[in-house]
Length: 290
Image 1: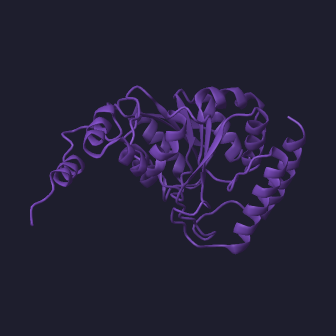
Image 2 (image 1 turned 90 degrees about the vertical axis):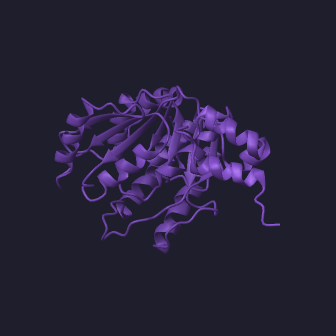
Image 3 (image 1 turned 90 degrees about the horizontal axis):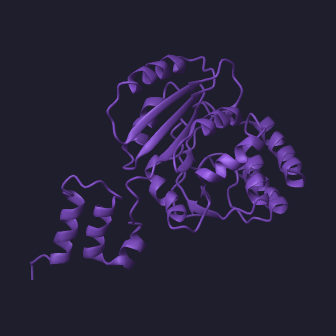
C-alpha cells in the first residue's frame, strides 16, 4: 500500500520529462508503446508522425490583426514539421503590415520546425481565392486549411492527420458536429442553415458528411494539386465546390471530430446570408457538372 506502480511512474516520467524527445516522433511513440502497449496508445491517440513529413498549413487572412499572432504561435507550437503559408487578402486593418514584418523575419529564421511563407493579394478577392494562392505555394506532403480567427484549435492537427498517415484516407474533414469535442453554443439559425447545406450537398455527392462547411479540410498533396486547377469559387462557395470535386474523383474521405470556439458577428465573423445562397447555388452547380 502506498507504493506507486512502476508503469504509472514510468508513464508520468515520459509525459513530464521526455529528454527533449519531440511529441509524435518515432522515438517518443516507441517509448510510450513500450510502457502502455500498442492497443492503449491507439485508444489514447498516440502515434508516430514520420520525422521527414512536412505539413503545409494554408492560412487565408483578411483583417485579423487582433487574432493573427496568437493563432500563428499556436500553429508554431504544434510539434510537427511545418510550412506555414499565410495569404493576405488585401487587409485594411493593419494586418498587412504585421505580415510584411513576419515575411522579413522569416528570411533569417532558424526554426527547423516552422518555415513561413507570406503572400499578398493587391485587391480583396475572398477566402476561396486566397486558398488557391496558398495551395499553389504549398510544398508539404499533407496540406491543411487553417482560419486565422481562433475558432479552430491547431492542437488537433495530429489527430486530423492520423487517417492519412495510416494510409486509410486521402482527405479528412474536421467535423464540429460529431459530438465528442466542445463547441461554443451560438446561432441556431446558422447551425440549421449549415446542416441544410451539408445535407443538400450530400444528396448531390452521395457522401454522408456531417459538416461540409468546416474550415478543417486536410489533403494529401497529390489530391489538392490535382483538384487545384479546377477550383473557381472566390468566396465561401469554395466549401461546396471542393467537396463536390473531391467526391466526383472518389477520393477516400474521412471525418474526425474537432472542437469549435465560434465568433459572434461583433467579434468579426464574416460569413453571412448572401454566402448561404451562394453555397446553395454552388452545391447544385458543381453537383451536376464538373
